[in-house]
Length: 246
Image (tube, rainbow, N blue to C red; front, side, top):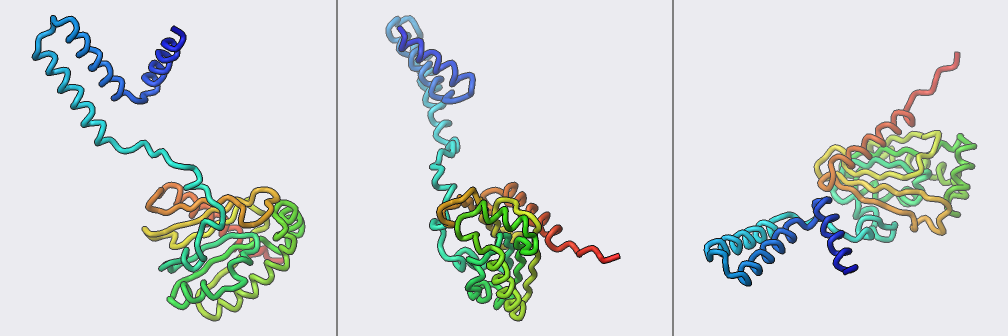
């Protein structure tokens, strides 16, 4: 009796939440057919109508889209789940990036040069402001051990960007605070646009352990545009003209 009560509650809960309705309809029709067969008092045409109704529900159910059950690990990844940065760029022509230092990318800037600048593309990079000493100190305490040389890493990236400016359209600016994530966007204004959000977390053992989410415009135009607009807002701050001395 207890199991029957649990079953009844589960059915009622499913129905109230709109889950598995087709299955319950077919089950109800099956019970009705069984009762009709036992009693023998229902016209055969009615029984055939019930059978056809059940088959119709099953056919319609087979055409419904899948509910989208997926493994969360297929969405949330670490850095090792991605290929080389040049592979991520692919045939992209525009690179937008925010990272505290971006030293992992621009320590060897040749992929950016060959994949984007040599093909007439453009690069826009936002870094933490190395002059914002309080922010730099805070972020160094937040990040993994790789962040301990943050100020010098930022300056190293700036030198690489200065060199890249000789090869094409490269702009960079500085953010006086950390938003807690890094953001890499390829082709923000094109249908094939894609991006990766990397959450910094707190004192990860390694930089590569951080959680990453990849979003393409084809997957979600709403969330893709959301992150593009986040970069646009950061760029307004990073590239704001310095107030003139009075």
